[in-house]
Image (cartoon, rainbow, N blue to C red):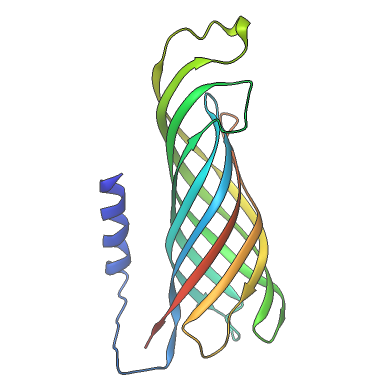
Amino acid sequence: MKKITNFTILIILLIGINLYSQETELKRTSIRTGIGIAYNDGHWETGTGIIYSIGYQKSYGKNNRMRINPNLIFGGFRPFGITDTRDQYYRLTTLGINLHYDLIRYKSLSIVTSTGVFGNYSRGLLGTGGFPKSNNNDSEYFDRLYFGGNLSLGLRISPKNKNLAYEIRPFNVQFGNKEFLLGYIMFGIDFKLNK
């Protein structure tokens, strides 16, 4: 996890972000952060948890309606509220790239949709429990790689000359190979960078 975090920070720095504290004109770039509540279902694992997101974002177009966002999502999961599965404690890390587009915009308010691709690494502990006939009497460690695509729909507030933009995305879904599914609700803040 620490290697992935260090690698992400290195990539963001290598992209060429120049920060000057005396200027107030905004660039078309931002650092995008988020926190959310998620449900995950994979080949072996099922759980709910809290996820976090961080990434770099670059805006395109005359009115900045399209944005490209490489990002990292990570979080911890357990079978909270799920009764038909083994005890599980696991983490996931997702590296992806998304394309966001403002479908409808009125002043600083817009309805935004997103699509993208991702690679996911899940790892953790599968314990005992589940249905009595499943014979889950032993614990075991697991790690799995998943690849797939994602879709989202949300509401974005981006005041024109402010350093922050806010986004609430109640519909986010990632679907991939080996029966992978990650659905989540996320609140995000974009920190716009100065020129």
